Picture 1 (tube, helix red, strand yellow):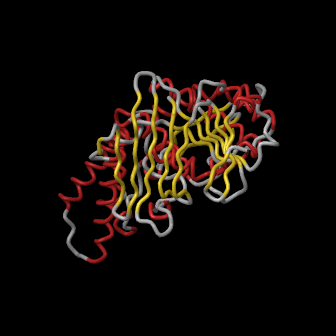
Picture 2: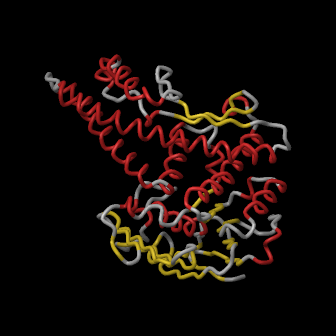
Picture 3: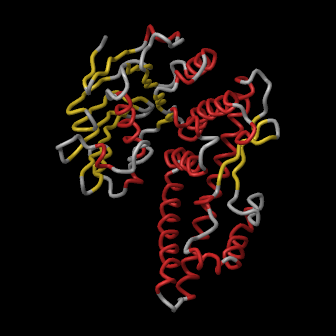
Length: 371
C-alpha cells in the first residue's frame, strides 16, 4: 500500500499544500512547531477519520477559515483510489473514490497506517485508556466489523450509564428497560472482547521473536488481555455472556450508587510480562522501549497478514528517542517494503543507510521546500 499524493487545504497551518511521493522514505525536517507533525496527522486522518492529537476537529481547521480538506491518492496491489476528508463546524464528510460515505466506519481502513510517536513510549507505563485506544486503532483499521461492534457497545454503554445517573433524580426504576440495555451491552461486550483477545494473541506471536532479537535473546515477552474483574474468566469465552450477566446482577446496587457501568471492555487493560514479571512495574526504560519497538514491528507484519497489504508507517520524531542500534534495526526491518514518513528536527543525528534514497523536505512555518 502506498500514498502517492497528499493535498491539504486550510489544514492546521497549511493554507495549501500538494505533495507527490515517489520514494519509499520521505523525511520532513525542521524546528519544532513548524508543521512537520501536521502532515503525519493528515495522513492518519485519511486512515481513521480522527486525529491522534485532538478530539476537537475545530483545532485542525486553519485560523479564520470554515473548512479543512485533506485529499490523498492511494495505491494498493490491485487498484488506485482517491480519499477525501472534509472537516467543518458541523462534522466530517468522508469520500472514498469520490463517493460520500454514509458512515465513517465505511471510510476507515481504506488506508492503513501504523503510527509510532513519542507518546507511544508511554503505552506501557501510561493509563489503561492508552492501551485500549492502541487496540481499537489497530483493530478498527483491519476489522471493520470490530469497529461497528465497538461503536454499538459505546452507544449502549452511554445509554446505560445515562439511565444509571438519572436514578438520583427519579424514584422509578424500569427493570425491563434496564435488563434490555444490559443484555444488549453484554452481547456487544463479548464480541469486542473476542476480537481483542484474538488480536492480542496474534500480535504476541509476531512480537515475541522480534523482541527476542532486539533484547539479544535476554528477555521473553508475553502480552495478555486483562479483564476488568477477576470474576470474568477470559479463558472460557463460551460462558462469558453468563459470567457478565451474573457479575452485573450482583453489582447493580453499586452501579446505581455510582451511576456507572463498572465492568466491561471499556475498563479492560493490556498487561506486558517480561521474564514472568510485570514490565509496567519492573521493566527498565530501555526494556519498555524495546517492547514498544517490538510491538510496532509486529503490527506491520500483522497488518500484512490480515489485509495482504503492508501499511504505511508514520514515525513522528521518534528516532531521536531510540539509540543507534534500535534505529538501525527499525529501518532495516522495514527496508523498502513499507512506505515510511518520518519527522525529525535534524537529519544529522540519524543513522539511516536509506538516507541517500530518501526524499527530504524542509518545513518552516507551514511551507515546505527541498533543502
